[in-house]
Length: 191
Image (cartoon, rainbow, N blue to C red):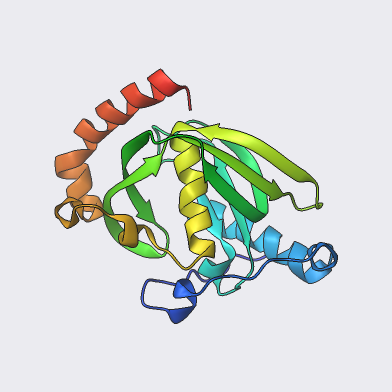
C-alpha cells in the first residue's frame, strides 16, 4: 500500500473518460493494490473520496469515506466504500448548492449544484453488486467522485465563478454562512 501523487488540474489524464473494469481484472493483485493505494492516498490527504484518474489510472474506480474529517466537519459519516463501474441516476429534480473543493484542484473552492437524491449502482472490490439510494451531501460526494471517472472536475460545474475562493478566503469570509446553511440542509434530509 502506497500514498500516491495526486494529479492536479491541467494534467490531461484528469480530462479523459476512464474505462470499465472487467470482473476478472478487478480480482487481480494489481487492481486490488490500486484500491488499497486509493484508500491510503485519500486518507493521507484528508479527502472525502478519490478516483483512480486522480492518481493517473484511467479505471472506473473510486473510494469514498467520511469519518472525522477536519476538512469537512459538516459532512455526514460515510463508511469506507469502494465503487467500481458506478452508474448514477438522479431520482428527481431537487438540487442543493454545495461549496466544493477537490484534491486535484488544490486551494480552490466553488459552488456547485448537486442532485439531492440519486440511485447509485456499482460493484465493490470483491465484485459484489450494490444498488442503493444516496441522499444529501452523501449523494453529492458520490456525484463528485463519479464525475472524475468521466473527466469532469467540479470546476466544470461551478454555476457562478464569483463563488470561487481559496481555502483561506473561504475560511475567513464564507465558511460560517455555508456551514450554517448546509448543516440545516443535512438536518432536514438526514445525510
